[in-house]
Length: 290
Length: 343
Image 1: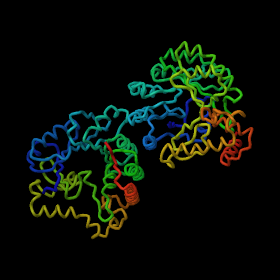
Image 2: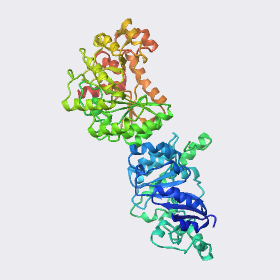
Image 3: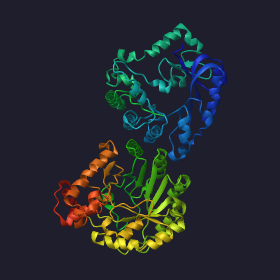
Image 4: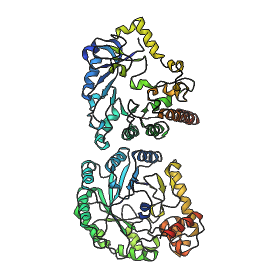
């Protein structure tokens, strides 16, 4: 069970009822983040981070110094106005923070680039809505190949740093969605494999303690190996050049949106280019320097 | 230092505008994107640059003007904005809210002013200029382009005192666009301009204002007395013509506005400012080997040889070639031919 990570809503009773878990605690309001972190600290669990999903734009959020010791994954509705964000930039750089923005529009993609260039880590949310593949490819080029020091933009920086041509690379942990590793709890403590399954009420266990049962262990193991189904089903993703990096994450978009094919092909080329750069300089080029 | 052109649009039409050609030939929709701004900032940072100028067209027209200024400041650049001071009420309100908090040594405006009598503006433009200077005066110093021999400077001192502007006037001679018609100072008029400028010395001294000469003034047309006066100010005037490196919204880069069609390249072709310098030094070399300066005497001039003076601006030298000298530089000849056809 140690390799399992649990995503749960902020509910003091629920958290107190868990033991020995690695927790991602979800709140919908930044002002609850400190209390959520305290609830984990007062329980017998370990905090991975607080996931803040808010309907507010980033420039509307009020960060303060009490958050300095709280690891934060913030998912605002949009980037907003840079000018209104400016007074908070210095504080944002001091926080243990990653800001996630949707990859569906140019404003958000520009926002991620702005933040990275100013030393604030970011992540791009890929779906479930439309994805601007072209804009995303530009952002990826910046994240991976720009030589001037900048913060990371995930999953690109992670992929560039960890790509191995001989094995597939799963980067869904950035979204707390790695199959069979991140489990999602509702307020009653019922367990689902993914956020989508949680939202649609598809639970595979009644509680986290039930996950240790043999039948549920088998389900978890099956979910971890679920990528094999692409090959068993002879799915087009299995023969796609980008498979090692996407692992079929965008299969549901096919055939109407084939943007992922060109995108991951380009990503592979970029990663190889990044690796060649590193080899030439005989060291890994740091993607971010404090 | 690099000049970043935020937009090619301008809300004024000055008779001496040497950016007109560049603006006419570019798309009206061209405005600098966030992505390109960040690319430029990264390029300048890794080239060791810490100062940047924002130009246009009129840079304040750009919808993200205030955001761009704040971003560049956040990246550690000191920012100078070359503006005509004619801002919409909304843009002025944004400047008031966000830019008046910036330290005076980090942000400055050079406000290009026209003599209200010799180059009159519509009343609403004058009103907007007054409003801009009332808000941003302490961040701004006046700039003045000399395009006629009977220019007057009195109004500039009045503006400095009335709006609390910085006590420095940037003075430039309007440059020719080689092969194109525009209001500019011919080499034969240089001495007259300098004499007239020096006649304002009492006003400069009485108001404790320093003159700052932009490129294109040849040192030989100043008397020793005039040079002695100019040498007393903290930022001594120079008589060379260094490339300003204008970077356009579509990421083209060229030597300066009047020479926007010569050796123009994409910024993406270069890795650093050093490479840019090298590229445009070639243009200088080619032109100078044909014609050293705007006067015959430039050929054997010790100031020219030592680099103290560049014998007028490169655009002035090139413009002289059009009428007086056979052109043997293929690229220059080609560009001049195009210009002649369009005149």
